[in-house]
Image (cartoon, rainbow, N blue to C red):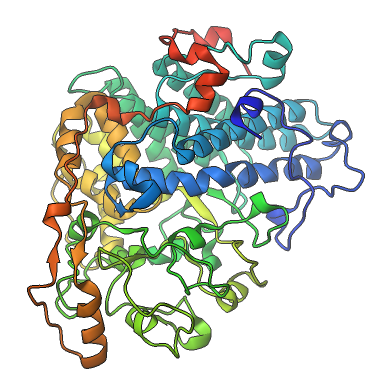
Length: 577
């Protein structure tokens, strides 16, 4: 259904409630005999009725978001249809902008509808409040993505009432300051509903909503200001983040890469997670990111097309590595590098376990090890992605107890992790200063840094630049880095533009021959034919307008009011939950 028909309407029959899985968390009510008005008659049905919000409405957003944000941020290199994001030349006709927008508005619509149905549920107050709090947190998250991507947008509080009033095609844009206030208001209500509710792994709880609120306030703190940030928002962000750190009972996993393994789908570091099932029925319950970022031949079904969706040269250099250095010469102090990108010499025990592990160079050049491949390096940057990969069918079975289907796996997608909250806290404490010697802020930063870099020394102070760089390495390919630029652009767009315009966004010549020779002979021979393609370096210009995406053309056709200036709305007097 097109966004023009879906954005402001009530989702029909709570799309996709009719399937079940082997995981309790993903249980949905059976479709046979299901009627919306007769549902939500027990505590169990309240939980089931909200479960699908953790996957299905987000499905199209998931694929598009990682292309859009990682390309714009300079973490990912792509060509072809996705090149406009690398080149900052995208317009509102791009299919990924349209699809991402549609999915996020769809998520908002579903959350609105489920929340409304839960209010009238015939169940205990405890069950109703917990489910309503989950729905509102996911609604706030969807709007948080929307406002950071597009800025001033319509405010859709109750789909049903707006359809009834006949105003769906005249909704004005609302100033993003008021959109942020609406998100804050929504999360405050979610906190009220979730307070005191028992934590269940994989589900949103009080501290999930609180962590998201800290991130929203940190982002809003610089909005409309020049060179500084609102201290009240910074203080509130620090306070909420510290409460999550101190009182949530959660901690960082000891091994960074475990966050992205099947066995750790419901781990204590994950605050907000999308939960998928490895089935194509229904299609939108499945995770198919492996197909988007994995190399052809990596999957048991052979249907991966991510050979050219690769880590940028700039991201490699941020990790301190280069495709021109042999595996023996490339430093490996930061364990996040290998967990983020594959390079020569890398072997992964969690992938291809039935073959003794996955060997990157052997996969590229050994026909017996990886039959059906092209037996060459297709990545122009000399690396390939790791996050969002689960391996082959046997890996999936060992991790989750069942086999995946074609373009459908059950690897969870973590949208908010505790390590992010640690870094949010450090940044909020630094605030408008260049650095801080506050012990708790240093502890938070060091907890993230020392997990990744074993033997790292605890610093005497932490600067904004330290946190800025750490966030990139910690959260690369999790759809977050572009939003760091958006947040910073609110009060210091010039610094963001200088950094983006100076990034290395080109590729190399001759890496396939270099890698193949090394694999076959053990010799690392960087000849004159192996070089960085300087002449292909894009000359990008990033002015302040580039930090918001153009609205989809289909939306503007449906609602011409989107072409007008935004209005201001006192959201706390206009809306209530």
